[in-house]
Length: 329
Image (cartoon, rainbow, N blue to C red):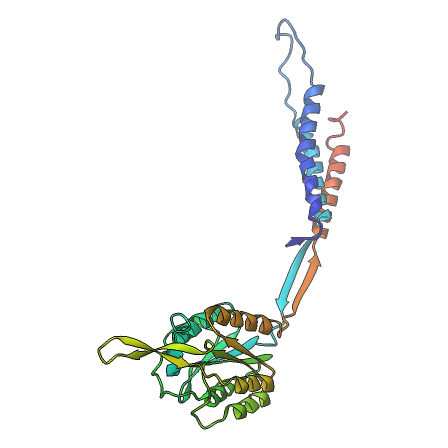
């Protein structure tokens, strides 16, 4: 229950004040009589009526309380949301090729991408999200799901070496689109993250982009890697790990074209902070794409309190002019 004009509740403070005033007035009108002895006085006959006359004041104060509640306009509220849409369906397509082990991100590109994507997932509890991974081939690590705990566990488990090495961007995008093509969500999105250029797979990236466009899937592409060279870990023949400088070669032209064809946007991340900012920007962009309409129906329920007020006042009037008429004079 809600109240349309709750300010009237301040008037309830007047009730204890009126009660205190009534008690004070009653004491003021009481007198005393001193006599030398009580023998000449017979025992007083106890009458119920004079004592009950105070109930008239109680009825009037209760009527005032009910009237104040009625003036505050109590309302019952029924609200619901338009659930004709499922929200936004998102597939994260992540490159897990060997080059994602480069450590220009901390601890490396792959782990940084996982951690930041998991934070993104946690911030979108109302959306179905899935995960596709690709290297030399691609496969679905987790289909679209609203159970984000399961998704996060499966996301945490991806690592280099799960599939043949390479960078099959077209295959990764095509697999992601395949997961979204039958979706009835208002907005269907792929976030494609890679640090290289397409060198494997049977589907060219731009062909996959056209497929995405056909199924109304918007693709946000993210190029991951610093400018110039990045440190890459290489096993040492003497044990341990040494680092080599590996040139960063991201096919930004193709990634930009994929985003443009599908109505998305291309981003370049050169460190952890920029990658996190990119996910935050995508989060804001996609929240603006869906409109959830709220409906609210309110019903006025002040009339029972108004009726109670009228009944109490009527009862007080009847008692005052019948039962207690003689006692009040």
